[in-house]
Length: 447
Ligand SMILES: *[C@@H]1O[C@H](CO)[C@@H](O)[C@H](O)[C@H]1NC(C)=O
Ligand SMILES: *[C@@H]1O[C@H](CO)[C@@H](O)[C@H](O)[C@H]1NC(C)=O
Ligand SMILES: *[C@@H]1O[C@H](CO)[C@@H](O)[C@H](O)[C@H]1NC(C)=O
Ligand SMILES: *[C@@H]1O[C@H](CO)[C@@H](O)[C@H](O)[C@H]1NC(C)=O
Ligand SMILES: *[C@@H]1O[C@H](CO)[C@@H](O)[C@H](O)[C@H]1NC(C)=O
Image 1 (cartoon, helix red, strand yellow):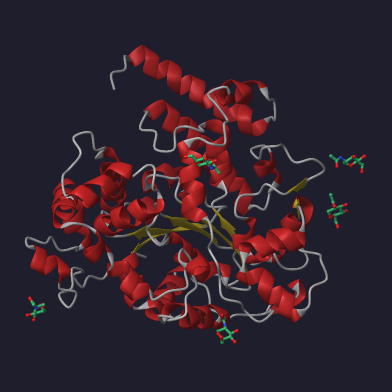
Image 2 (tube, protein in one colour):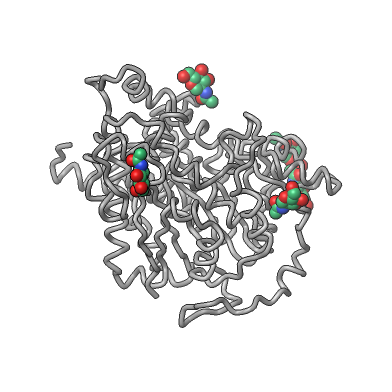
């Protein structure tokens, strides 16, 4: 992309103006300007994210929704290691920085299941839909800036429980602070349990609602945003999962904000695993890759950009994180999905320890229930977190052709080395699952 400095300055100014207007005032003018780019809900980007994110089922928990008083009066015991400034009463804000098909739903559950955490699943979906409907993977700098500026402002508001900021992005615009259009509302326990979900539900019905996102939406009716705000305030901590922030440096302004106390968990996964999973999930976008797999010949118009973007964003973020800049001290932890899949309980403990939070038994129970392979998976549970996580992390090795693996690892070589993923040189090596492709590495947060 060629840009003269003049156009860059103009774009930067425009981006600042748009962010400002879009967020601070709810004037519809600049929004409608952007929205004229097309709000069609059938755009590929939307389809992509919907497919990716649909049908996250979750195993039921016994109704463990405790009253706010109980939650607030509960004093946690000290964590195994802590920051110098650790304060048990300080509200901690958690961001799971991920990309699609990297296991972020799974990591999200580690917080969603915690009774003291208010969890939101991908609220930035609405920002993208409102501002840049067709530009999910936009590599245009100016467009990315607009999106990111708005995303940062919204994240800050959401952590402070100003959920009404989200309303201005939801289409159709919620009336009377009530909406049935919140993306993946059912993925958030807090939004499916009392007091937000007011329908008088018995214990059994409550389990059903928590087991099935659709059930939550059907039974709980439109989301009352005012009640959601109350629920958010009643929880001690807040966690947000997103696949819509490309790099850790995009979050610097938030991380440096001392009032926010933001801690970022960057989730990474072997790009070969991400590719295999996306090919299964985003069937239209990754059509040519499927063609390659089926025919054994690489289509000449294959878009390598899709996987390159993942590797570039990971590489930049991880390099930044591992360089230990002062602004990330105590605020950044790198997590390989493969490690979580192999040692879920241990990794969950490390995560909570880094965050300075107490790992609740309900999280441990959820992990135990959801990481042992279950033989009676119904097809509806195919895309859920309920599966043998360890086997799942590795199954790209039988799903991609050797050529595709070589192609991908060539494109992503520096990243593979940095993260400790081994390159394969022979199909026999690829398919021999007793030969691990994940080097033992420890990525401890620096405190
Ligand atoms: C997804 O795309 C298909 C065509 O590719 C279209 O028929 C369908 O309505 C879209 N779904 C959504 C939710 O956008
Ligand atoms: C919003 O609330 C007002 C007053 O309670 C009511 O008159 C109006 O019909 C409501 N609007 C919608 C769209 O429900
Ligand atoms: C949302 O809940 C509040 C508090 O209970 C209530 O006053 C308000 O009427 C509710 N809004 C709607 C649209 O039901
Ligand atoms: C774990 O599974 C058992 C048996 O299916 C169930 O009773 C329990 O509620 C589950 N716990 C969690 C936290 O999912
Ligand atoms: C598979 O890998 C293991 C461990 O590296 C090795 O001992 C074994 O010989 C390999 N099997 C084959 C068939 O290559």
